[in-house]
Image 1: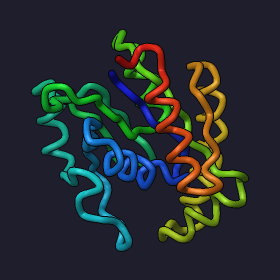
Image 2: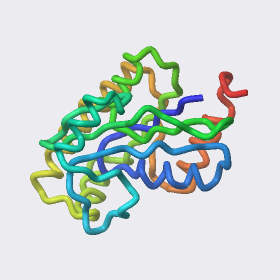
Image 3: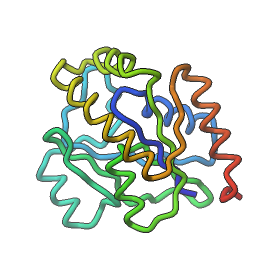
Image 4: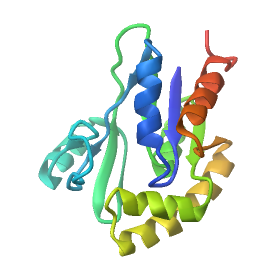
Length: 179
């Protein structure tokens, strides 16, 4: 099963994805690539951090399921290669989710959101984003919410981390396509 967890910046989708993998033995998290620098508060394992030349070479080699440019940096999801018997979890933005669906892959689409725009902005500031980046991500979040609705994503509000993770776990493991 392919599970896509998406949402705007600052809503906690990365933290949720990590907790889902910790709690579910047969869930494999694909690690995204990026050309942006690592944030001071960010775990170095959060992404595969590469330069533009390495990224371009990976595009040419067909390494990515999807890739996009966002705010001057590249982001990508490599083609998943999970261990046998594992479900795949992609933690990506909505633009990436749209690309996955365009590939014709069947997936369970979950959209994580903050309780309010103000909460999202506070979380972005808390992780070290400057005001210009916060405003860009807030504007982008509006578009992402609309796109997620069009994709038929299931919305989960991350107002309490444990509750949000439990709700997503329930969605995943009660899904009719899940064996």
